[in-house]
Image (tube, rainbow, N blue to C red; front, side, top):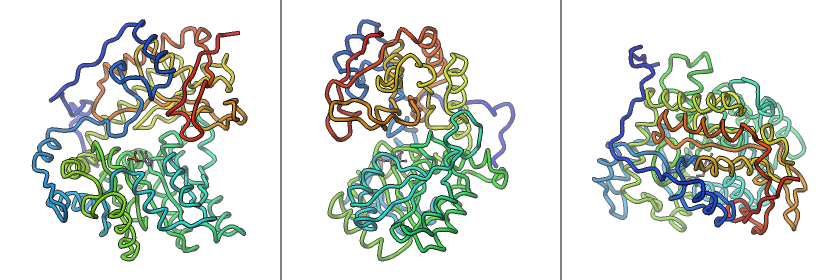
Length: 466
Ligand SMILES: *Cc1c(COP(=O)(O)O)cnc(C)c1O
């Protein structure tokens, strides 16, 4: 691993080059703004948000090198120089010959699943991300999640809770439904599973099983660099490797990958597919041309191709990943000091607060995670999102909870290179204030919502304490 001069080991390797002013609001503005938005963080105007921890997707700060790269964007229709630089960067990172850009990660998913999966088949994963799950279903197939058993204990320090349960995967493939498995998709890091990493040992074991049963293995590689960093930290074999080397090992084990370029590659937009098989590459290109754009831009602009190409280089910088790890750890620490538990061990792209434990006075049917997310906003202008019964539970036609989610969580996502230690400590002080007397925060009920994509469109109202 790259060694750091100890004097500079804990120094954030950035300073501000261009800044955006934070909106500073009053309690009254927040109360009125959130009520008018039906208490839905996805409807709340961003101008009323002070610390935006809603998503790490496309929210990273661009570097001056990315800005410089975008100035030389080549927008020609086919085989542009921006495409060459982009494909070169992703080829050299992944070792894949066939690289196909597209508009977002979810476009890549749609293209891959609609080509490779048919009705009645399964896609098996450590955990499908939400759009991934939806695209498997749109292809007529069924998503099957097989997270490792350690993932169920939020408080343990198991280093690789993002792993797939290899015994369950093998049992499924060897069983009567084995022939229905169309592909295995490993999400690194496991976003739906608390942002926890997947070990190389687990990827290797999965690879071996997939080969034995002749099932293709894909990566959902949005966070290949953060996963690589946690492998370096937690898997002894790789303690001395560089992030780029470990990322290479991750990609080497796969037959194909889908990627959102808005995560680790720090691009404002874009996605891509990588594939080894020539025939599949041709089929994917056909679908991308039909739905997103010609196969050397796939709906991306020359500017985003350039920003992604440069972002890929920066994503595997050890000094950057180390400071990102410190930010995640600091957020977990300030939350704990405030009396709020989060999924252990701390990940890099987000911290998942245990709202079920903090908001014990609110039953799952009144969405304790949502209550905490609203409280964080009203108290301090922090926008986050619920990952609990609202998002994952099963509701009836009148929006009453039928089956709660296993955990009531709130995700605080960390945009890349955006917030400083001062901002994170502020989040800690808001959390401390919220957690001082949790009983005063009410539960919520859904007033109206569409059948699909409920959390994005719903309107909520407060349920006064009994
Ligand atoms: C964000 C994300 C996607 C979808 O990518 P978009 O670019 O937002 O369409 C897929 N998988 C994972 C793991 C993600 O985090």
